[in-house]
Length: 163
Image (tube, rainbow, N blue to C red; front, side, top):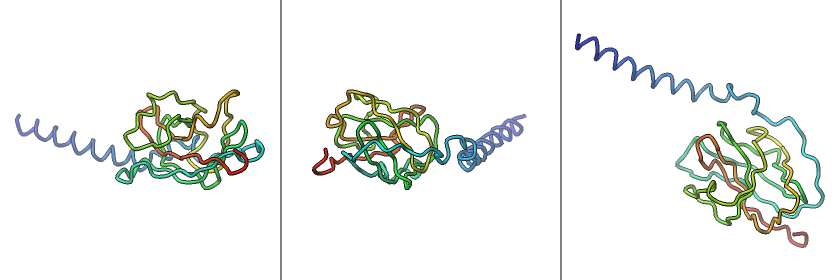
């Protein structure tokens, strides 16, 4: 009886490991609806700020982001080179902090939620609510609301002569 119990426990552990591994491999296919963004951002006028997403924590191979971002009056535009590692519950936040570190608790700030991420890669646009003073929000982040985790951050730099 003891041998049978040990066999069941070992089988459950191995099954969990294999299942988790298969889940990581097939995860992007499960979220194909949020794959590559198909929409084209609408120009919002001259650029007032720009930046680039970076790998928030190089020790974390799953949560990463790259690509450029341009802010125009009333619109945040992610560039065609934008890409993040896929995951659930990704939102784009304007954040009132200049320096975003892997341990920054973005969810505890007075961020502005621009909405769910339209895709894990490609150009996409997000409306900025009326009355938002962009000077008060020097960072843009991709945040997982599902895991309360930072995925990627971009420092926004004012465009000289326009911002």
